Length: 325
Image 1: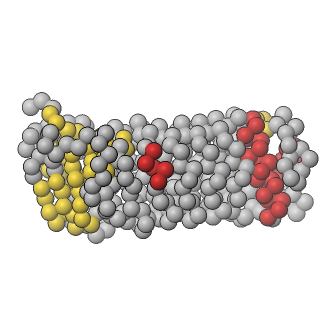
Image 2: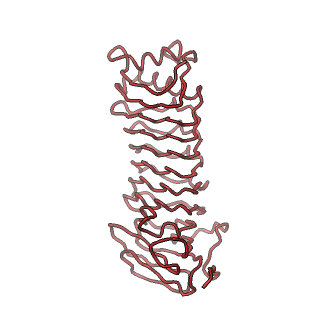
Image 3: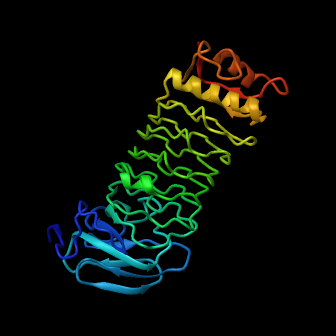
């Protein structure tokens, strides 16, 4: 049977109509673990008790785990609505799921997402976000790998309104996507981990106002990322901070890379840390010693010398891989 779209329950992605359900648009005959006329909702550990409207006139109620549905209209594109207790969807990569069948998240609804929502949409390489509402993340702290490997995912401006104030872990969240939305207004006061968060993305917005004073690791955060912003205003965690590969092969200009390090040097000078910080493999970056050294140093070269001089005279940082001019 040829592909079709069920017109009775299909909600066009352009409507922006807020509803209580979590709503997905799925294409059953894309590759996946289920048959070409089926779709499997993936779950993981936790308490589930949810209802599903499959968009073909059929429903299931009181579902407590994974469920596979065979669509009465055959292979095609359907709108699937989930309501009830549903703390986490768990595609966890395309190899063992129907991740490639997901085309859109059209609505987040009123579902309260759980404490740990890692790997939720990982590997959903055909997915876009068209929802105009925001997810309820009030109980969520672990968001790592959330959109990792959603290779065409660009994000949506509605993400500017997300409340991420409880999130501690953004490791790999946007890695290997096309994400480039202005999320500079996000409240990151509980953020602790940013490993590879924006790796291999076109992301390039000014997030210098983010509160990162609890973040322990920025390893490869912007590796291969298009970012070209001065992040020198960041108040770094005063101990135990890892900056290895943070700007490796990124889009940082000489001016912004230099001014970022100068800003951090001034912060360390005033606040006494972080000391002995590793900032290895800043490959492709150029540091200009002739630029301003900020409030506490005559030149950028002086600021770098302070950073790389052993304690207690300097900060004891190890910076490598970049070119110093």
